[in-house]
Amino acid sequence: MTRRWRYFYRRLGSSLRVRLMLGAAVMAVLFMLALLPALRGAFVIALEQSIQQRLAADASALIAAARVESGELRMPEKLPNEEFDNLDARQLGYIYDSQGRLVWQSRSSQDERMDYQPRYDGQTHEFLRVADGEGREFFVYDVEVDLLRGQKAAYSVVTMQSFNNYQGMYDGFVRQLYFWLGAALLVLLGLLWFGLTWGFRSLRGLSAELDEVESGSRDSLSDEHPRELLRLTKSLNRLLDSERLQRERYRNSLDDLAHSLKTPLSVLQGVSETIATRPADREQARVLQGQIERMSQQIGYQLQRASLRKSGLVRHRVQLAPLLNTLCEALDKVYRDKRVRVQRDFDEGLMIPMEHGALLEMLGNLLENAFRLCLGQIRVSARVQDGHCELRVEDDGPGVPVDQRERILKRGERLDSQHPGQGIGTAVIKDIVESYDGELFLEESALGGAEFRIRFPVL
Image (cartoon, rainbow, N blue to C red; front, side):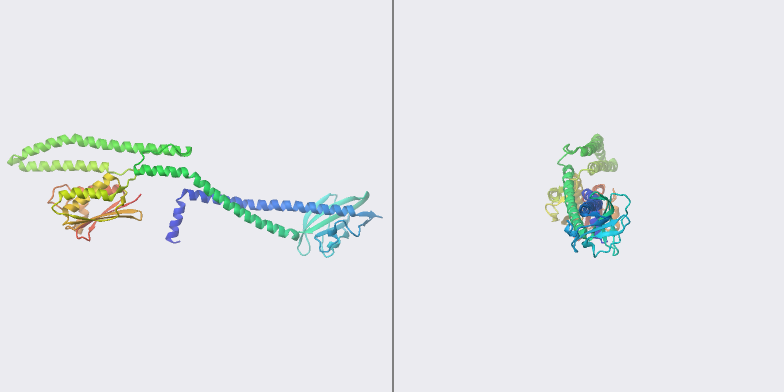
C-alpha cells in the first residue's frame, strides 16, 4: 500500500463522522441483506397461495362437471373451463380412482408425462410441488371427492400447473427487489449522512468556540450547547479557569519575589558604589557589582521563563512584520553607528503561532545578538509549511566556530567577552523554543556569519 493510501485511510479513521457513517452504512447493508430473503420468501408464499386458490377453483370446476353413471365416471366433451381442452394450455387436469388408477385426464395434459400417484387417505385436499421425469416442477392441488351430484364416489381430482409459468414473474420480482432495495439503501445512506451532518452542527459550534478561546477572543465556552455536551463544556471551562488562575498565581508569586529582592539589591548596589570610591577596595567592589548584576539578570530571566511558558489550551497567532519593525526601530537607536540593514524574507501577513510576549523575547534576543555582532547586514526569514513554522535570523558577523556551537547554547556560556552580560540570552531563547516543542539550531549563514534556525510544530 502506498504512503498516499495509508495517509488517506488514516485521515478517514480520524474522522468521527466518517466512522459513524461507516458503522451506520454497514448496519444498513446488513439489514438490507437480511431483509432480502425475508421479502423474497414472503413473495413466494403469496405466489403459492395465489396458485393454490387458482388450482382449487379449477378443481371445483372439474368436480362440478363430473358425474357418475353405473358406477363409472363420466365427463362432458366440452368442459366449462376451456383451458383444459386446449393442448397448449397451462392448466392440467387429472382424475384418479381410490386405487390410484388414472380414469380421466384433460386434453391439455395429453403430451405431459406425469408420474404422480395420489394418496386416497381421507384427507380433504393437498397442495404440493412435484417434478416430472424430466425434472420440471409442477404445482399440484389434490382434492378427494366422496360424492358427485348426490351419488357416492371415491375419486381424487388433481389440477396442475407448471412452475415455469411463474418463473418469469419470480425473476422479474427478484430484479425489481434488488433495484428497489438498492435505491432504498442509497436514500437511507443519504438520510443518515444528512442526519449526522445536522447532528454534528453542535460539535462544529463547540469547535468554533474553542477556536475563539485559542485565539484569545473568548475566555470561556458558552452554555448554548446540547445537554449531552454541557458536562464537557463545563469541565473545559473549569480547566481553563484553573489554568488561568494557576498562571496568574505563579506570575504574582514571581513578581512579589522580584519586588522583594529589588530593595536589597539596590542597597547592595549603593554599598558597592561607596566601596568603589576607595582605591584599596576597588577590586572587591567590582566583584560585588558583577555579582549583583548577575543576580538581577538571573531574576529577570526566571521571570521571563515563567511568564512566557505557553498555555496548554490557548493557541496564539502573532503577525511577524509589525513586531519585527518595533524591535528593529529600538535596536537601530542603540546601534545607530553601524547603520545595520535588515533584509526581510517572508510574507507581510505571516502569522507566527506563538504568544506575543514569547515571540517578542525570543526574537528580541536573536536580533540583539545579530545587531551586536554583525558588520552591517541581517536577514530575517520565516515560513510555515508541512505543519511546521521555521524562523531564521542570520548576520554577516564573525560567526561561531563549529566546535563552539554546542557550548554557546548552554546557560551562562559566552564567546564574546568584550560586551557585558551573563550569557543567558540564548538560554532564554532555547527555553522558549522548547516550551513550544521546537528545536534550535546554530549554523553557518550564507551571509558569512551565524544563523539561528528555529523550527517548531504548528498545532
